[in-house]
Amino acid sequence: MITEKGLWNRLRLRLLFTGPTLFAFLAVMIIPFLYGIYLTFTNWDGISTTSSLVGFDNYLSVFKDTVFWKSFLLTLKYVFISVALINAVAFLLAYVLTAGLKGQSIFRAGFFIPNLVGGIVLGFVWQFIFSNVLVYLGKELSIPLFSTSWLADPNKAFWTMIIVTVWQYAGYMMVIYVAGLMNVPKDILEAASIDGASLWTKMRKMILPLMVPSFIVCIFLSLQRCFMVYDLNLSLTKGGPFKSTEMVSMHVYEKAFLSRDYGVGQAEAFVLFLLVATITIAQVYFSKKLEVEA
Image 1 (cartoon, rainbow, N blue to C red):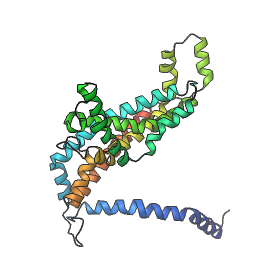
Image 2: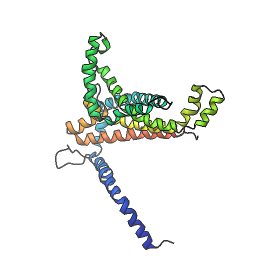
Image 3: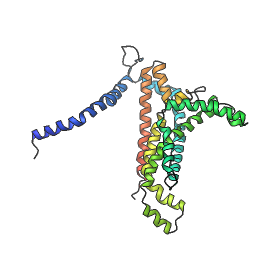
Image 4: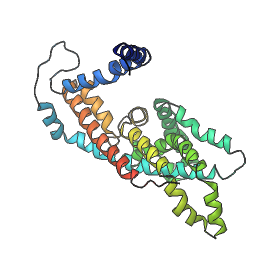
């Protein structure tokens, strides 16, 4: 039987190891999050030392802000296409690079490298490519598609965001899919081959069901990163032309810090958090139902 002194010593020992981490988590995550929720009920402009409570007026302003919802719908479109392409490309790369290709480790490292570069840098690099390199090649080779900068076209600028996003994150998701494919039992695949199962049958009936945990993780991560995109949006398109590529995170930033309407901006950020959390939790919940045991 553990005595009161023993319990106290055990508690002190746990606090010794978990205390600093717990304090950092509270100071950096929980307290700012709660304070941010408090600010959604004030009219603080982000600068003044005083503010007053306004109740739910900021949340009413969020639902009346048509620009916010327009940018949110645009973000939904961007997320849906980007997530689908990221995971399709990542899975294809992982499948090819686990098939015994010569030098596949080098290719894995090469495809992973873009994920190590920050979104700001990537945005400026691809801005130069779309505005200068491709335009030069388009004019020299008489290719109408690239004769003008995609960043100057409201329709094409949206697709530049998707192209760069897929290029950046596909390599990271590929690593997760590689780990998942390497854990697929080889004896099951060999037995299926002996029974005459085709490549497509093995993929549909065996590999894909066993890869569901990897799909859950990759879709969750790509959803989170695409919904919160800001740095790439800022450096590549700046939300233009004519706000045709202004994602919801950029709109929230401009509302809070450029328009000096911090209360409404914080309310929009909290509403966005709830929407994204709902979507990601639903994705994980329904995806878990598809898991199978090896």
